Image 1 (spheres, one colour):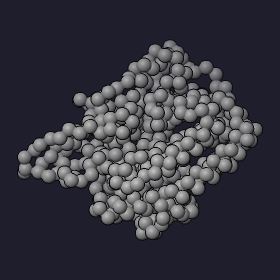
Image 2: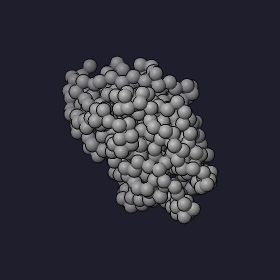
Image 3: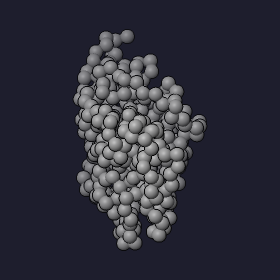
Image 4: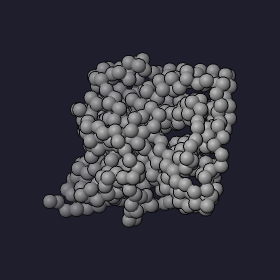
Length: 422
């Protein structure tokens, strides 16, 4: 065995920063410790406050996925009631705004993170234009974006008009056009059904260009990890966990466990004492997305599969948005008064955010927040385990040659520092 040496690297542009301490044996990464240095203590700030305050505070956990935190918060509050009713319209509009946040995250991650790390041309307008459109569409439904608080126990705080819905659908058509013009020049339904890598690579667009570059450089098997996936589910995404291609659909929050980590402000999280990967690749594996199942058959849970899965979600979400739009009955109530929040209670809110499963849990005593816990996707993927039991990102880095693109492997998980350290 060669001499062990270490290298500390600061990883930036991840909604904050992280430190990765690489441990090398010879020319290979033997282990990597992942550290998040700073915490804003949002969970502690919430203690002692009125439960409704969480609807204003929690969207500010993150500037990129704050809407997911809002929806998780309102679901946690609603779970404290013995009974609560939501109109189909309110449910649909919540799903629409949440789906749009995922879409704009996926575009920005691909163009502002992945393409530059591959050394490819990344026209910034191809990230900014869909992001702007998605923000406008959320604002049409929610009043503003980011940091809105329109979702409240019992529904949503405002009505939408036929004009709002018309303008929404116009922008949705524009988003679909941008997907085809920028990412891959193919009909959305055809892409969703595609099950052959070669068919995808033969098309025009930035996605085939990026994936072909990964193949040309021999990166396609880099970043293989635990091959264990978890999805808590919601909306478009079915819950389940997958070990390789074996899928089980039962998920129980009782088996979720968090632990403090030495030298890091981020807690690690297990399910039944095991690490699982969460996020678009996990969702694609549980949903049996044809193209991702084919990528997994060839390259397992690699860099190639992880990047492809993220983009494959966009057309599914766009189709989902169209279905939700058509389902809205404007005559329905936006809000059904559930009465005051119970003075005593416990609730959990689960959301599939851009980076994976997000869980909010609240305990209320004497009308105030007694405890609040936020479990984020990055805690699942970068929870800083041990050599014997590494988290998904650590496992993906272990074994890489010193000349391999470790930062690309790391950022393929789309790390979010501020969410992780709340």
